[in-house]
Length: 244
Image (cartoon, rainbow, N blue to C red; front, side, top):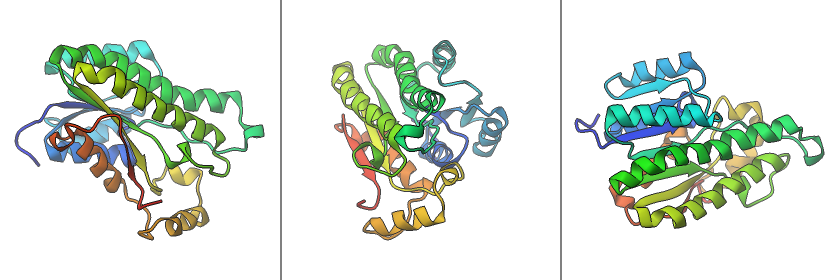
């Protein structure tokens, strides 16, 4: 692990799958990670694995604006700033358009879109004060192409993509970069609840590398966008999908 900390990065949905890999990669790169994970036990286990000197976890509902703002203010007071935010939290539930319930639609929009607004609203004054900062949002290939049963998910990720472009334009003059990552198919435990083995085999053969992505593949893309090497990258959606 790097001996010198780069800064403080908040990662939502950090307890499992891609979020866990992102947290681990950022810690390895020298970031101090504030993990937002709704399951308290999962978050605590993550912080223990990564080390309390490198990671802290908070069981915060990302759809609760007041709770998000309060956490960011607390972290800012203790850490002297927040340099990065990764909006990774998501809930996925596939269904045909005619079968999507209001609860499903509200849930996915709240966790992906409203939560991204809330974390940005909480982070912007902190980053603006410092004159710099970087935000990474997680989009999806489903935002730009049809995927069976993913009408609500596609709409949500389309909104995340549009928000990313708009925020990059609006916040760039403040020294804040906003980018997104488009992950390829990653068979995490959560994703396997909506995609079976046959579905993943189709996804494997659709991309040029003929393999599925790993959480670490996606984490590497996020790490690049947060790094100094991407200092002139703004408003970009980075596809980490094997040329899907």
